[in-house]
Length: 216
Image: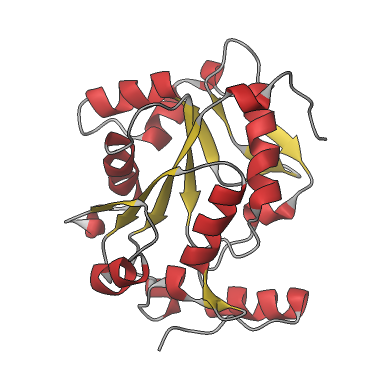
């Protein structure tokens, strides 16, 4: 189901792009540097965000920070390094949210290892966020009952999380405040396809006919 909304151009979106993981289930590698048709997933997603009109972008690095930050040279994005990536993804989310610059109305929290995400997918979610129930602040895609990414959260929620104690995470906030969440039902499986394992790589090749190349 694709919802219509009044004026998506009135919204100012931002994005926190998570690229801090260690890729342990792929043998320890920077998944964001997997390449598709010669371009890293990291650069592809930055390009998709910009094509969707999102230019306020913060990339969170951690493991493999030297390689990933080298890939980000001349990309014109904000970069923040998680000094303790072993603390997990939610620590990186908080760090990225804290580095967003004004002005923005809401922010996507998006993963750097979703190879099919394109500008049209972000535009779909901008429309979905602007069409959310008026008492809610958070939307994420729900694909045939499976929760996907990116997650969109209002500036108010960003401010609340950043100002709270370090123990308050975005995931925890969502779980504790279901009344502020309006899941977005869609059949777009781009939102649930990411790369975690060798099996995921094989499944991607089977689906698309394209092999994701590991970084050298």
